[in-house]
Length: 343
Image (cartoon, rainbow, N blue to C red; front, side, top):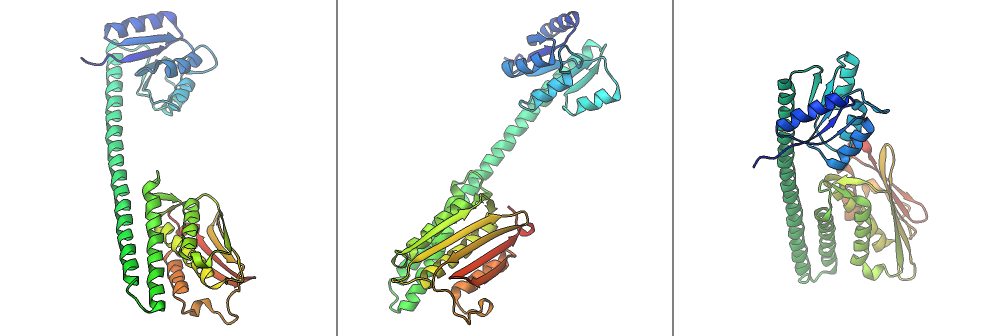
C-alpha cells in the first residue's frame, strides 16, 4: 500500500484555499489543514509535521510566506512550493534563499501543480534515502576507526607487557630502568588510543581531559618519588587530532617524568604545574616545577639526556618552539603556531 502524503495549505484567500483543498483530496493527498497567516503556518508545520507545504507569499499577519518558510526550514526539513501571483525579481530572489521545491505563478494549470507536487515528493524522498545511506556509511566508518583505535591500544598493551617481562630478566639497574621508562612511554600511547576509542568525536580528542589522566599516570610510574610532590593541571578546552595529541602528550609525559626524577628528593617536596592556553595565534603548554632547577651550565640544545632529546624530536615534529628557563625550578614552554595545527 503506497503512502498517502500529507499536505499543509497556507493561503489567505478562502475560496482559493477551498478549491485547492478539493483538488488535493481528489488527487489522493491528505490535507492536514488550511491556514491564512505565516504565524499559523509555522505553528502548524511544527505541530502537524506535513510532508509538503503549499505556501502563498502574501498572507494575513506580519509574516510573509517567505518569512514563514525560512522559520520552518531553520528547524525542520519540509519541502515547500510557493503559489503566488508575484513574479518580480526581488520576491523571487528572496524566495530562492529558502530553497523551495517549486515556485508557481498564479494562475497556473492543474497539471503544473500536480507535477510540481509529485516532483517535490520524489526529490525529498530521494534526498532522505541518500542521507540515510550517507549516515550508514559514516556509522560504518566510525565503527572501523573505533576498532582501529582499540586494536592499536591492545597491541600497545602487548608491547608494554613484553617490555615488562623483559625487564625482569635484566640484572643491570640502569638498563632495567631504561626498559621500564620505555614501557611507561608505551603506556602513555596506550592511554591516548584508549581515550580516542571512547571519544564521540573519533577524529579529535578533548586534550584537557587527556592531559589530566596522563599526568596522573606519570605520577603512578614514579610513585616512590612522588609521595611528597603535588601537581596541578590548568587547561582550556581544546580539540586536537591524533597527529598533534600524541606528540604533545609524550612531551608532557617526558617533562613531568624529568621533574619527578630530578627536581625533588625525600627531604624536598614540591609541586609540578601544567598549563595549556589556547590563544588566537598559538597553543601554549607550560610545564613548571619548584624543584632544585637545572645546573648553571645546562644547555638544552646540547643536552645528551634521552628525555630532552625525545622532547626536541617531538617539538620539531609538530613545528613548535621550546623555551627552557631556570626560574625557582624548571620552566619549559612549548608554543605551537595555530597555522601548523590541524585541529
